Amino acid sequence: MQPRRSVLYMPGANARALEKAKTLKCDSLILDMEDAVAPSSKVAAREQIVAAVNGGGYGYRELVARVNGLQTPWGHDDLSAVASLAINAVLFPKIESAAEVDACIAALDAAGGSGLPLWLMVETPRGVLNCASIAAVSDRVEVVVMGTSDLVKELRARHTPERHNLDYALQTCVTAARAANVEIVDGVHLDFRNLETFQVACESGRSMGFDGKTLIHPSQIDIANEVFGFPDDAIAHAREVISVWEQAQADGRGVVELDGKLIENLHAAEAERVLALAEAVAARG
Image (cartoon, rainbow, N blue to C red):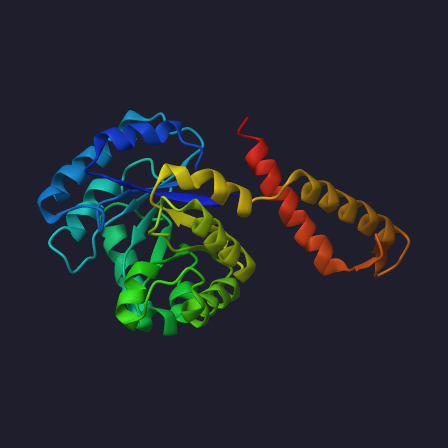
């Protein structure tokens, strides 16, 4: 299992930030050539990302390159630059249809990235409504990434601390991702200096079913790791669930009680997921 509790955007134009990322306790890094980079710096960002990845030193951190859209002047050149790098995936922005995903796969393969997984950003109303087909179009689609900043703009909505105005869009996309058996990470929290409201947003996303949250500042990492991870007592409980469930199976029973609560196969399956995530994090040392 690959933990994706904390997924940090790192602007490719900032060489110092790319270097600092090697020391941060985030699960994944999005090496960004798109929104975080001004048009005049696109080429430099691309070159610095290539140099940073080739330089190594990122350890366990998952590396994902966010390219510019294929319709832009930079998209295809971005793909040509990153397709052969030692990265884990390529993130494509503003995906709105399954046909666009097919075009991204074709362009990535033509650039030399055959077999490389795709992460896809859903950040428009059309993308939300088509998320089920977008997530399911190919087994190379690995993660859906919510782009809530653009989505709020496209909806002509407002950014609110509670985000109830985005409940439909967010839950629709979580449901689509789960149906396609792909992971999904929540959008960024723009008020990055306000860690109290960030905590609320993380708790909200976790309750909806997101696997993690995209971040724009290192100060957000610890909270994301905590909220989307599992504390020691939850891990201990998961072990107890597995233990009593295995004993029930050995005894020929389909259900069992633990601490006054009924345990069925669905609880055992969730406990196994909890332990797999905990073990993946612990294995990093």
